[in-house]
Amino acid sequence: MQQIVEGFMVQLGCPHSVDPKAANAGEGAPPPGSSFTILAGPEANSVVVSGTVGDESGCIPDEHDAARISNTVGTLAMANNDKPNTGGSQFFINVADNPMLNFWDDSESESKHPVFGKVIGDDGLDVIRRIAKVATDDERPSKPIKVTRIRIL
Image (tube, rainbow, N blue to C red; front, top):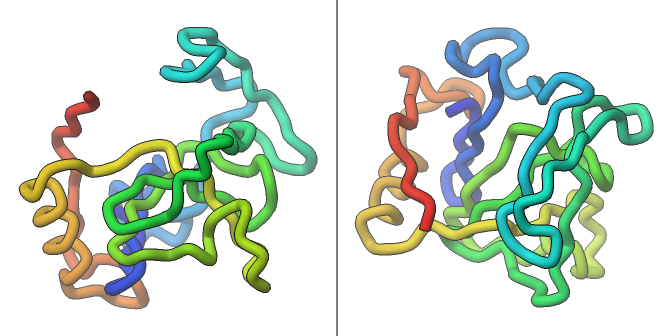
């Protein structure tokens, strides 16, 4: 867990955040040429090589869904560098409704984040709510938090 903003989100997925106090925690991304698998949609099960997108390396193209899944409590969204197609390994879980992060939102926020999943069940949401309230130093957990298990349905 590399970033916690109470009342907003918890972010994870940075390969450098094993030590949340590391100077580069929150800056990691997959190496250029990494591959990933699309698990749903018309391109399900195809492996795509991410390569380089613009000035960013190891990025995953945004997957904007026509269904327009909103950044609501419990949803998982792709973290990025506040530019299109700059997501990588990092993602966040919304602990509040954050419609200003929706890719179709016309607000002045330049930061847009496609939603690709959701925490389901009260037990899962309770864990996220507890994480969102831990002590932090400059939005980093004071003590390391490690995700040891995630079940994908």
